[in-house]
Amino acid sequence: MAVREVIRMGHPRLRVPAVPYPTEHLGSAEFNELVSDMRETLHAYGGIGLAAPQIDVSLRIVVIEIENTSTRYGEIEHTPFEVYINPTITSIADETAGYWEGCLSVPGMMGYVDRPQHIRVDYLTPGGVDKSIEAHGFLATVFQHEFDHLDGTLYVDRIKDLSLFSFEEEFVQFHADINAEDEDSADKTD
Image (tube, rainbow, N blue to C red):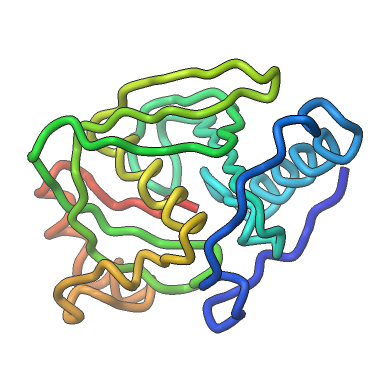
């Protein structure tokens, strides 16, 4: 296991759509090492989600783990560690809501993004099993943020009002109270 460097906005790999992970390599030593490294990197950087392109690996793999309900992201739902291979998202309802998002690949910044709040996630597990889950609210935002990385998209591309894009310190000073009134929605997804 190793902590890998998270590449930052401006690195060309972040803007290239990732390729599907070859299912015949599931369970291989290479696959297991990549997943272990992604988990270690996620923990070392203090994120809750990480996409393989963020560590300069252009494959459609995401890991998500929300260990504590009270974190630097605010009060959020516990989500055990999971690996999402070749995932897709389907929006189930038209309802959208906004959260302040941050990103390990855009360090020190926060931006307000509206996203669908009821989605279905279809993915392959590390054991090669097709799986579907539904997600609502904050967790739906986390999935969409992470899966955007697989398509070469960053959350900054989805900010509609650039007056709601700031450094973290200014977010805390000028925007956090407004956001708290809107459901404690400070969110730094990865």
